[in-house]
Length: 125
Image (tube, rainbow, N blue to C red; front, side, top):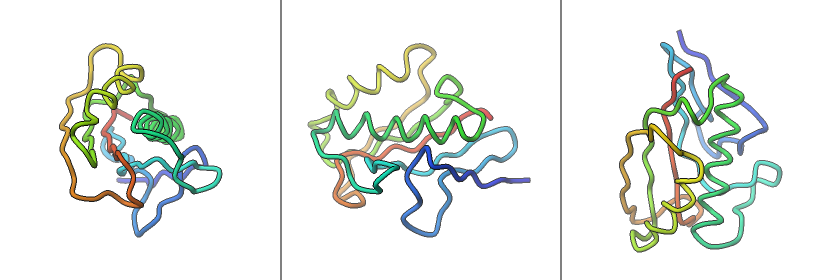
């Protein structure tokens, strides 16, 4: 059994996908970019500002799904420029403090709406 998660705590999907799916004891969060859920516009600022908005979106969707950042077991981080890894990581470390999730980080040729970062996540429900 699977349930689609839809919430105003994260940006609306900008394509044919769900913000998240809850299935078999897990929550699968679609890749989140730096869209403000209130305006659906990309937040201005550097990689740190965009990473913060992305992780706030992930947090909001997890909350709506009955989960939390503490239950995240896996993330994938997509960066437009791997030279921004340290700055992204500085913000990421404020959201994940101990028992860090498994993670992959890759540089992507281009991200939706030309953002600097996109993050998806898998968490325990």
